[in-house]
Every structure is written in C-alpha cells, then in structure tokens.
Image (cartoon, rainbow, N blue to C red; front, side, top):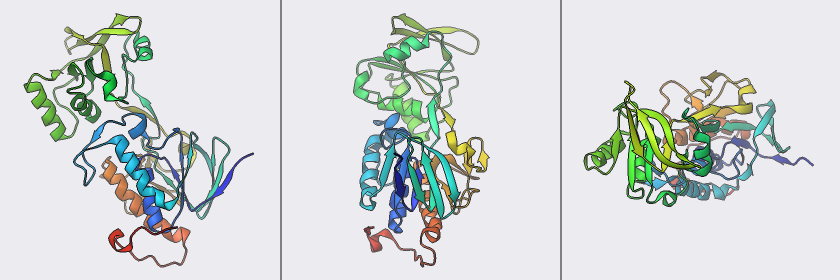
Length: 338
C-alpha cells in the first residue's frame, strides 16, 4: 500500500544544502520531508568523498565532508525532518500551496512548496576512454572516489585531472600513499589558488610529481592488478608511470532525471532561478545549491546555504498566508520547536 504524508515543504536532495534547507525552514516554523535517491543522507559528500577536506566552511579552517554532513544532520534534527531515502520524486502534481510529490517507491507527500536541492542531479563519474579499464575498475585499481584514505596507504597513486578534486586529493593523500603523480593536460590547474600553491610546494620539495602537460594514454597490468599508467604529451611522446592506483577526476555526468519534465526553465541541465528568492519558473517550486542557475552564480556550498535562507523566507507566505514575518537573528530567537 502506498504511503501518504503531509508536510509544508518537500526538499528534493539530502546533500549539505538540502539539510541546511531543513534548518532554515524550521527557523520559520515550516516542516520538511526530504527525498533522496541515495540510501543515506549526505549526497556527494558521503557517496563520493566522505574524507575529503573542505576548507571554505565559515568557522572551520578544515572539515571533512562526512563530518560536515553529521553536523548538518544534528543542526536540522530539532525540526523533525522526515527522510525518504533510496527513492526519487518521479512526479509533481497540483499547484503552489497544494502539491503532491510522488516518489519511485509509491510514497505520496502532500505539501505547499517544493525546494530542489539536488546538487548536480543524478550523477556518475566521467570515465577516461582507456582500453581494458573495466577490469581495473572491478578490482578497485581504478577508482573515482576515495571513501577511506587508509585503504590506499602505501600505494603508488596516479591522480588525473586539473580541478579541485584532483588537487584536493593529491593534498589529502600526501603522507598516505607511497608516491603521488598528478597528470594534467596543461600546467595550469582549475582549483582554489591556495590549494594549488600547496600542491606546487610539495612538487618543489619532491614529495609529489606534477606530470604536465600529459594525458592518460593506456593502462598496464594483469588480472585487475595495475602496474603502470602510460601517459602521452601533445606530441605523442609517452611516459610510463609505475602505479597500482589510478584516480581519474574528470568531473561528473549530470542528469536531471524526472525534474527535467516539470516544465521548469532550464539552462544547460541546470534550473534557472531568481537570485533574490530562489524561485524557479514554476510557482511554489524553488531551487538551491549547485542545481540553481543565475547570472554570477558561484558553485560553492556557502552560496547554497545562503540560497536556502532566501528560499525559506520567500516560501513563508505560501505556508503561513497572512502571518507576518519579522526578520530575526538566530542569536536572539534561538532554535524554536515545531
């Protein structure tokens, strides 16, 4: 039998921004149910890199992704969120103030507003086109995430990519792996300047090797055991890097899934919103975090946190029509019960 629930807001996505949306809604006396396709809360922070260090959360010079999720869960807990995990919202019926969100498990949730906090949507890694890579993926010699750094202690690692993930994991696995080589097709990295500075300092000290400008060319090994990664420069000259672990960080494939059929204005697989309110083109539906697009958008967790506050304030009149909303600081109001 299908389960039926009633709440004020359905939050689509239980990543860090979705969890903080619960807090911001709760501070304005609004209840939330949260739906996520993963079997646990946390989104990419838990599914892809629970031990990845994050450096741009205010008040935390550094915090691991998994620890951030645990703290956000604790922060949201006083407002009694209900989590519907391992399922996705496949249909949204009705109109603002009287929606029904239906999930893939047959659950129906009546709500007054919806907030899409689905990050990149359904995601999967971009795989490098290397012959025979499947056998190494099955053995774990090629991996697209780092769940536990200790699993790679003493390994000879090749990290491929030039973005934040590649640079951050080169720093994070320093001192854990026996050797680290970072392969990138150019000598310029698309990562936080301070992180790049630290990476180059390790390279100058001979503790990390920067293999630039090179690209992945082939893998060597037998029966799923990797022995070397072959790279090639733009002229075709090749190098052989001894390795028993390859971590390619070439970003994620993004798919909106059923959200794409909700009649929203989309921009390159993202949802267009009003930056002042996080409203989408559909009344009563808001979008926050990486999935939300507007001019000048910065894809940072802290930007998503700010967007949840604006969304909650804009939704308030829909949930509590006619009830005045006075802006108050959390330090003066405290955390109310619901």
